[in-house]
Image (cartoon, rainbow, N blue to C red; front, side, top):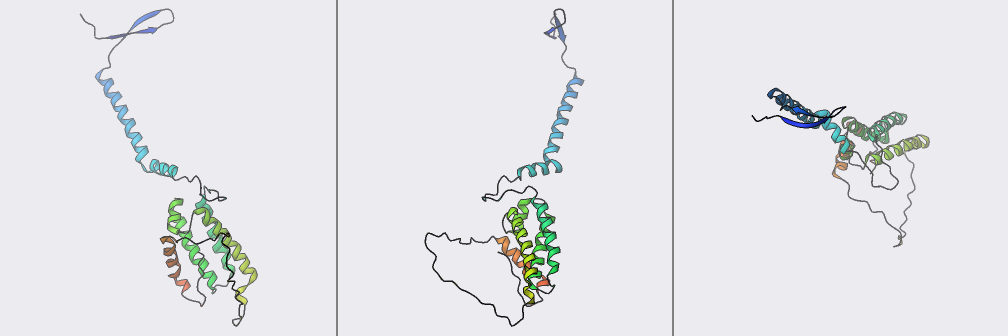
Length: 214
């Protein structure tokens, strides 16, 4: 009579003995298969579900470098931009309401703030604003805040209407060994931002045209 059981050597405290291992029953095989299927389904939910997919996208969206010497990556650039734009809108209130400078700053700052509030991904923010990397936008927003403080100090809107500003032109040729910084072509998103600024009703009143920072 042939035995279908499988035997293996199993150590015991005193000696080696033969241990009979019975093949798994149909119920055990079904339980193991069900557990394996459940594990596969759980893994698929993690990889394809909303939270898992968002985590994977966030991991892929990490910026290692800006590619610009001296400009470090800002991990929380979106939050920094929201804070800077909110502060800009507060500071610009010190400028007379009917001044073109204030209208221009409020218009493009509100536009950029809205994009930052709508987008969680830094790449989407860069693409929609179209004016460089988020780290560059941070520097630009910080410079704008400095300019607002200077504008308030200089009080250019207090200059008489008949005041003539002297324009000095220098046509001296630039030596060949001196590097010249030639502007590159602006991205399409920049012109969309410019159109959004121009179409703002707040800019339709007043004599001074908006000064858009290129």
